[in-house]
Amino acid sequence: MKKITAFFCAALLAFPLYSCGKDDKGSGANHLYDVPLSGNPKSLDPQFANDPSSNTVIKNLYSGLVSTDENGNIVCCNAQSYTVSPDQLTYTFSLRQDNYWFFDKNDNDEIDENEYFPVTADDYVFALQRVLDPKMQSPYASNFMCIQNGSSIINGKTDPLNAGISAIDDFTLEITLDYPSAEFLGMLSTAAAFPCNREFFDSTKGRYGLDDTSVMSNGPFYVRQWFFDPYGSHNILYMRRNEINANETFQILPSYVSFTIQESDSDIRELFKDGKIECFSTLYNSYNKNKYSVKSSPAITLGLVFNPDDKIFSNNNLRKALAYSIDRNMLSSQIGDDSQIAAGIIPPAVKLAGRSYRELSADSQFGVYDINEAQKCLQAAKKELNIGSVESVKILVNAETADSGDLHLLSQSWQDTLGIYIGIEDVTAEEFDRRIAEGDYTIALYPLKGDLCSGLSVIGQFEKNDCLKEAAGKALFTEAILKCGDISSLVEEYTNAEKTIIGGFGFIPIFYKNAYLVSSSDNESLIYDPFTEAIDYRLAQNFS
Image 1: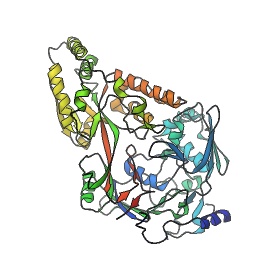
Image 2: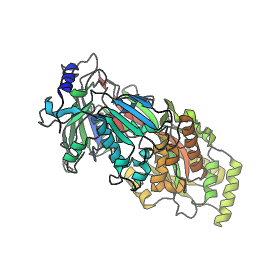
Image 3: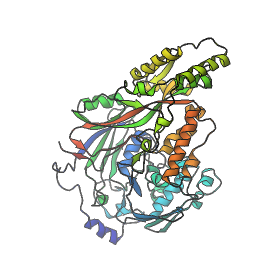
Image 4: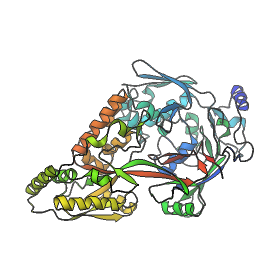
């Protein structure tokens, strides 16, 4: 591994180290955060990992070319600047020269010269080649198929080395696309586009991201210790501030982030109640906003899905009858604060050009309420099924993602308008997932959530999730969405995808459900992504 040059050593000495000194309560900086992870991270490889615990650690371990601010705007991070060619096919990034890899080789928390070296353009080339490589099986590969030769590489027809990604010099990166894509910069802000150093990757001999000796940091913190015993109770992942990257451009406020690895969300809630942790993410709306800091984000769409093997409720006219008889205006005035009425598929938390997608494409265009049409469809369904009435069934509900009290209002309206009794069966998250996988349900209230904060990720669930494929029919959306060259056409393509899916009546949107970040009231500037479920601690402040 090459050593840092004399130039970069001098640059390091020129930058202030932000952890020096005692805790500064006036600024909220230099705090040691005690926070949880729900389960052991499966991997700290950003090109591969996609579970919430891994996502949180990766967000605090690495940084990328660009990032998104809290309004959803793309801003430079490790890229000092970038340009886009007039044909929107070539992106050229000028990299900051003060972003470094750090690996605590001597395990002493000291700044040793041979443990630091600059992040270069080739680190981004290698990372994106890995994402596209079919041998890698990255869950994010399709998001980058717009890169030149990307689709051919993903399908195993072209070598990843032939991707349109090149290092012009150590600090100039060029990426060429096969077609203009308005989604591309947003994809570059995700963890999948974080850099990966070839030499270090090869040195891990297949264990990259799997333990604390097989990861290094170019972001705000580095992993000091990662201990997990599946039979033990004192499992931790301990991170310290990456001093080499702390400067005026890239501030890192906390000194440490100490994660306890917990088995369940209920364990985490109990720790928070006892004051042993400072923040956590949850789907429960049960915390007093006068006592705690509670941030909510409508990131989940709860919609009805139907078992395609069920003879009765696989009937399209019967599903139409249910959909047309939903009076969303009536429901919106009676449901609780945890959710809002949904008629579309993409939830309001998805942002485009600094605005909620739902501001750009109102979901009122989808929610048709027509009792006469609903009753016509019901009669047509009975005739097609050769039945005199529809027997009662129950909607399978994951009790951790939905308030069944809100759903009872809908159940009552179906009984009043259609004469169909549809009850509710609340189950645990584990049982819900098992029964969905086994096809042990008639109707389910399905929690639809993207892996990333993008409409592409939400719509893409209908292509890769077995429970949702039936609802989309044979329609494919990813490539068409990626080929949208501007925001206007992107909104139009998203809207068309929603119309296609909703018009098939295999997924009937009902609610937009909130996800929450709950913290003690003395914490500020914690940034929560409700899609990846990652909590970003880089700029967090504590005033206790």
